[in-house]
Image: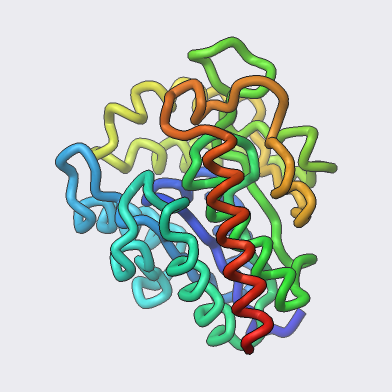
Length: 262
């Protein structure tokens, strides 16, 4: 890997970085330039995009990520929180241009294909497709945030990779890093309602499991239901699998047309 290689971290929402604190730190320790992009504006429930952005910038700064290396694509493109599947063309065009501007890309990290949040799965599918176009699929790794696989609603699993996504590459976290991760998880005050439900599961994942887990990606998986049974975003009535299939199929058709035209 070139010494000037860039590690790209792609997030749907401000605070999604909680799933890869360790890997963000590890890439910096390896001497890679870390760049992060967020694909929705994060504004919801009366909280502004400015507030959400500032919270993530503050956490990333503690991990050594420069402010100039943090990009709020969703805000620039006008993609609302929970609205990414309806704006795949805009997100994909921005991502293609961003990839092309990076020089040597050493690694790409994106949320897992897991049926947890529809924005997460939408960004995963777009990222995998574009990486495949570029012949760089082997550089992409996915990280789990939360999913409802093999557990009774309304409960969910946090930082728990799906077996359906293939072999897991795990790195055990030091106790110091586990405690730092938990402190960072509490650094999003505007999202306290979300974190009231999420933090107990994050506490278990970081203190008891204590691993950073990553998996490779594949185009085929983005054509398949993430797991059997009700997906978590279906349980919450945010979205449905047929809706996701339809949105992605329409976007893939446009993407193929884009490829032929260029």
